[in-house]
Structure formats: structure tokens, C-alpha cells
Image 1 (cartoon, rainbow, N blue to C red):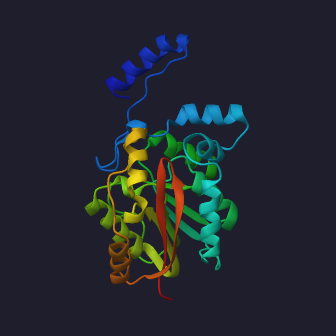
Image 2: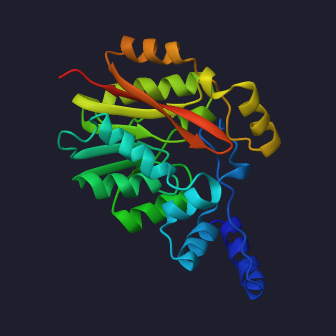
Length: 251
């Protein structure tokens, strides 16, 4: 243990009497994403337990729109993401695991890989769901082989990155998906940023949205990477919405 860790433990012994604790502030994706408003692990797990809800349902009800996660999964089902067996999954930035949980319950994959920077959430997901956690580098899926996963997805992550990092992740998603597999992600397109919605973002004080990615650019870029657009849909992401894209890799 480093001297910082030793000092933190000593301080926590004293603060524990008051029910407080010092924790390490997590870095974002290579410095791209502002985690000042990131969902805190211990508080959320405790409050979800007290409310009798799953962590995912609690987050939807508290931080977003109730049912938004399930609606996302339902739309993925409708667009054929789970039509064939999904045995190996890779997720970028699962965070609290609310999409991870529902994906596992739906398709029971043999392998589920995650790239997550928030260590408390990452360790909790490994303990709770038995997933494989890879060390993220902030822009690649370097520990996942080419053409190896049936589904690679990212939820409420990419729009918090710089455009160059976002495109790098899209390239990586296209690289690791196997023939016939699916690539699923959401971004902020121009139709998600009308004047009224922008005013809601400003009023909310939320700072987790960094990049607008044009609809046609997104389609053209993934098409150049050899994928085919299956469909799109929008889902609430308080205080606005994001647009999901579902692409398929050729068989």
C-alpha cells in the first residue's frame, strides 16, 4: 500500500465515526469525460438496497427516466440484436451495470468483457456478475481480439468523449465484432440538440455531454468500416435524449 493509501485509511478510521469516508476520485476516459457528476458507487448501491430496487432500476428512477434502460434493451431485441445466440459480449464503460445486467439476463453469454475506468464499479461488477474486466486505456479495446464478439456495445458513454476518441472507439468496435455480430451505441446527433433541449442541458448544470456527432457522419463512418446500419432510435437521457445506432457486421 502506498503512503497515500495508508494516510487515507487512517483518516477513514476517524471519519468512520461520523459515517464519512475519503475515496479516490476516478479519472475519466483519458481525461475526456467530466466525472464530477458521475454516479457514486457506494451511495447508489446503498440507496438501491434501501429502496428495494435493483441498482439499474434505481438509477433510472433517480437519475434518468424510469424504464429507459429496459426500453433500450427492448429496442435492441426488436432490431434483431439477440436473434442469433450471443455467446461473447464486450461493453465499453458499463458503469453501474444496468445494461450489463439486462443483457446477461436476456442472452446468458459465455463471456462478458468490460472496459471500465471507475474502479469501484468495475470491481463490483466483477464480484456481482462474474464478468471479465480489462484495463482500459481510454481509446481502444486492446485486450479483445479481432472479430471475436457477438455483441459490442456502449451506453451513455461516447458522447462524453472528444470526437477523435469517439471515432477511435467506433473503429475498435468494428474491429472486434465477429461476422454476423452487432455493434450498438448511442451518441448526441443534431436532432438531439434542438433549442429547447439545449436550454434544458444548460439549466440542468450537467457536464457529461461533450460531443455532437452528426447522424450522416455516423452512418458513413461505420459504413466505411464495413458495417451495415440496421436501425436507430432515441432514448431519454436526462435532461435530453440520445440517438442509438444498431449496426451489423457482414456474415
